[in-house]
Length: 560
Image (cartoon, rainbow, N blue to C red):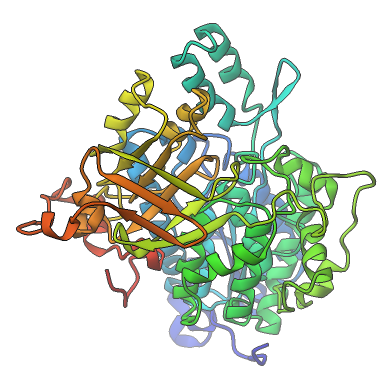
């Protein structure tokens, strides 16, 4: 760990005669001389009541503040935007989701650095708020931690546990005539019973687990469901820990290293987590300036890490089941027992292995298996290269066992164009669906294709088609789906030149994705498409964003 420092960052605004005016302003907000002596801690909240994921974070901030005060610190509140993937999915608004990650990270940096604060605790819920928190901490290297608001409890319909994934799939089943409109409505009403982020090992819970294995969240704290009475106690303790981090000078870059990034990637592969985690871990690595962690790590990890967490979307159980079984610590315990991860520092001051020792396995649980009896022999990811993706792309292996697919291309210029055909039952077995112009710059925003993938599942086509896009997929997506194709279509990547009827071959074991066509010849004379948005935040993001193969970040330096 970094050595202690007797000076405080906040001395820049509270110490000495020259800061009298600043202190006068702070006194107006309720501070006094005692507050000026101790650490001033940002409580950065991504609260919004636009959806369940973040809607209780304002309440969670209350015990956080109390914990900070009890440890001798002074909490100050800041807020940011949050964009719900589940609500915006399949709409124009979904373009804002990945962009929001950058805005939130920037907002945290500006709030903390702008006011010379001593530390920060970041309250997060929905998908992009969590990696944004990790990115900001890695970038600033100011003492801090991430507190996840927790997963939603499952809904229930006809004795079956539900998540929002089931609603998206029901849309496809309704279009196919498998269920009627009334049944769809009943599922819609039952799926989301209250506060918390989407309930499977989707992106939010995947990244909450990643924060734990990176050492940026205390072990077990993120596992607690949003409505569980233990959450407030954990939040109080988190408030105390962030003050300890300041006093002991525990810095994020002490935690975010090649070792911890590998640990996080291994834990995620072992739970068949969201492919978005690849994008986000690459972004966090870039912000922490860890140069020896790249996209290829995920393929080698997946080949050597069986899936031991039987979690949705490909498995049986939800996040609250994992919590009851023993949580992230139990996953960690299995990984340690099998020699798959290395010890590393955490925000608590204890090492990762010391935190994992406390794992308590529920008697008779079957959510987390042992490595000698895995759910699947191979982890949840694959990285492919070929004439369709010279810079790589990501295949999601959760929920299916196929490692090879060959078929003919069905090309769509947008998600909406494809979804309309799917809803009209226009996709056939053997089709390789190509959705392009949905990349980080070309979208812009790299939208998720859950509406399409879930509809295909609902029509019982998930095992009979492949889907390739320069966009990305929800953590709830499964089937033979391949995203993050780089270079993207907007940058003249080969995916821009695929045509209907081209033969496409995908071989996961060989790490290849190829097209029987002279894509290079078709590219002659190509010019970049006109920007979809000439001004505003979308235009700014499209201009600045880098390749998905490097995390699709807007921080400098980067290269497309």
